[in-house]
Length: 413
Image (tube, rainbow, N blue to C red):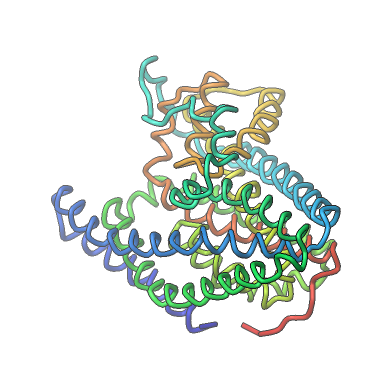
């Protein structure tokens, strides 16, 4: 699809803004607006369900075969260790940048909100992130259940065991390995069919959001939104600069290849929606399938750079809104806390909000302050999702370069 796909998606976004604004102005009743936006949301929901239909078998097939092709567990462990090392460094950069930027911009300092009642809540459980729940999301009770619930982290765990077993059996499991590899090819073909509906889904998603909230919400939260998106831009620059250290000038040539998945993640506010396209484009960039099929699913579980930065930025924004000052030592403690809790986000519904709720509770910041960011959370999620995709693309390319498996670009975009 190339550049035409990008043009279609951008056009759909602009049309969605125009139609959503028009409907917001013409339809006075909030109930009528909600009903109409619900019809548009059906289109987006259908598209995202189609994407989720693809992801589970695609992750299983590509990851299992990728691990089986690695040959020995020593190679697997080395790639996994390098990937996790990158994820930890990227998370530290994301969290630190969020803290620095929110302190410099201070988007909540002008709100001067009174502290809410002690029993006021946001409706998001702050106790949702526990070691028990993380283990539940990590280890599947059954592979069928993990596939049925689209639990990516659980599918990754099973696929690692399955792929290692395939590799250990060698030629005795060669036919099964080839069969699973063909499954991945079929799922990528199905992805191509589904992507034809992407511009329509983007139009519906933007229309529904603007129709409900109106453009006014962007103005009211201008300082917060502007500060966060500026921080995301700086994070993009930091991640690309980190990538430049290892793959030099090729990091800039990576951008045209990942333009489509990043734009798709931004417009649908879902990094999952971009997974199949991301896998395909990394292959075109020259990343070996062996590396991309292993590192990318891990990244979707442990390397959510945009979501990670949002946790520090939003938490300190809420503290500023209530006039609560956190000492440098407390902010450093928050950074270390989020280094751990943010790794449990994979598979948790509304993950960023759950992590923030838990962090607010830990530092004595009113949990009801989470309501301050809910109105623009979808807009913020667009930026987070796009950044998550970019961060995982850079991470995968760097690990491929470390392993000497970053080949030439096979197709220009």
